[in-house]
Amino acid sequence: MKSKTFLKGRGAQKNTHNKFLQHVYEMREDFLEFCRLEGEQAERNKTQYIPIFPKTIVNKVDSPDVGMMFSMNPYQGCEHGCVYCYARNTHEYWGYSAGLDFERRILVKKSAPELLEAKIKNKNWKAQTIVLSGNTDCYQPAEQKFEITRKCLEVFLKYRHPVGIITKNALVLRDLDILKELNKHQLVGVNISVTSLSEETRRKLEPRTVSIQKRLKTIQVLSENNIPVNAMLAPMIPGINSHELLPMAKAVADHGALSFGLTVVRLNGAIGQIFTDWIKKAMPDSAEKVLHQIQDCHGGTVNDSRFGTRTRGEGKIAEQIHEMAGLAKKRYFNRRSFPQLNTEMHEQYKNGQMKLF
Image (cartoon, rainbow, N blue to C red; front, side):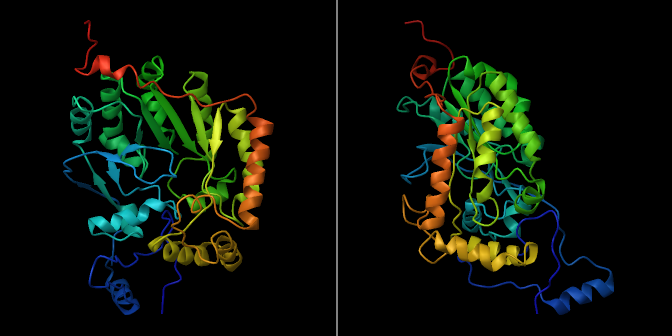
């Protein structure tokens, strides 16, 4: 018998089995009852920060449909707890679960700035935009404590190297001073994720993220400082937020975004199990309808790994989403475009200062 208790402040409601581990661990109800009677905690719901020491930090992205060539992740795991997050599966490579472990066991790469500097000052490196982060949010709550992302931005500025940022956290404004300096040379672009205009939906889907109003304000402040912003209206989840596409596009445009992108939700690997368990607890009345609509977007399954199709979806529901996106671009983003970043300047600053000859 499974517990029906909803774990507030977390996206995932349990730890799923790690496919790379031989044994399966289960929290039994009789053990939980024993702990209750003894006045003991079976498991603490606290976030742990675990230092790790990678040899490299910049990753080449081989997937042809993600819109980036290189990425780096100062953190693995993410306390934001977005239940749909595609990055959850990567936590299994580190020996953890894609479920609660992904939100509570945050791996911290304190050496990221030094590794980044070694990479981009290498004589064989040719400047290409490096994205912070291609996997987990570089401005998640851990960043307030460790400031690794800020230190990486200082490296990008020192070497005049282009950097892209993807985040849903207003903490990015802490680094406005560095962003403004980078932008003087057309070296930075920021992607802000907006998943809904409803706070109720946001709290359910993304329990430890900043409010929607703070995200819109972040877009506005960045735009007022001429820092280019692309809004990520993603993922589109049929039956949850897909009906909000047009008003979301209008809202981000009104606050200064130059463009927007979207993906149709897909639930690969352990995420399918995590999302299904979550929605049956968080939205029991609409759970089956939502799951069936997601399946309709991916050929009858929630799992889709086909390049090109996996993020766009297929079928009538996906087509309707993309038709609305086309309408939104014509209506709210006419004559707006997100600029290309400058890759020419870095070679002159290979040693951290401008070459005179």
